[in-house]
Image 1 (cartoon, rainbow, N blue to C red):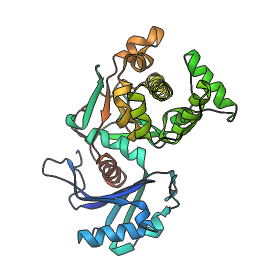
Image 2 (image 1 turned 90 degrees about the horizontal axis):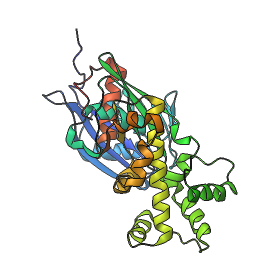
Image 3 (image 1 turned 180 degrees about the vertical axis):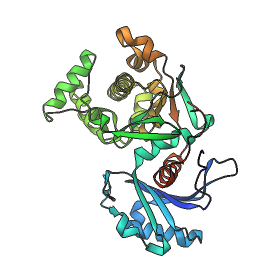
Length: 336
């Protein structure tokens, strides 16, 4: 007998990042879709601890859930996590029993992002590259945010299994004379240059400095929005920074499709992916994605979509909670 979804009673779900904390109540609606209600979010700097943020949400929402599932921006092991870009340590034992909560689950935020994908509808995605997904094959969920997340979500009987990886730390692979020159510049300061250093938000200044040095001009710090505006206005340094990052990202996505057999499709995720998606879709980055010699048709046939639902980490945290608790059934066909 196929088991029905378990979230008949709402649970508190959270997306705990380096910048913001976001909470909501997750439950299965009458159509057995995961729904998020009572959504609120604040800058993490507003609170000295995660407990303070959760207490603030519960007080404002006037709810008393007994279970909580958190997607946190950092590695999770043995019921503990430390945020990568915020000085917060989180543990199941610290939250268990807090304000009536007696069931606590912690998951990596990109693991939750990946697990959300099968729960989504077609309107939660933007088409980047058309193709034909193959049922019951792995789906790659990857892309740059503050770091570079790489996960595969794999059909497993009547459930889904997320395989989290450290693929963002693979070596950067330049494929043009300019990119080789940038790598040489970075190697003056770093023995190992990773994909994450080139493509992610945390690596933006490194690439910008290296490109400025290549052009023989002083480095001038810019926010991501300022740099993108200068690129759109034709500034050659900023254009090159964007081109290098877009090509590196889509080249790596193509590599990951081959190495992971991701014929179920590709989902791009992460804040940088959202901001740079239009650049990813330009001819050169797309050629980096599918130009694989004898395996070009293999990759070119795999569709690529951008995940645009901001609730994805919350939905994923709820789905992972179900999986851990009762192994919820796999919902229909993948919509990608």
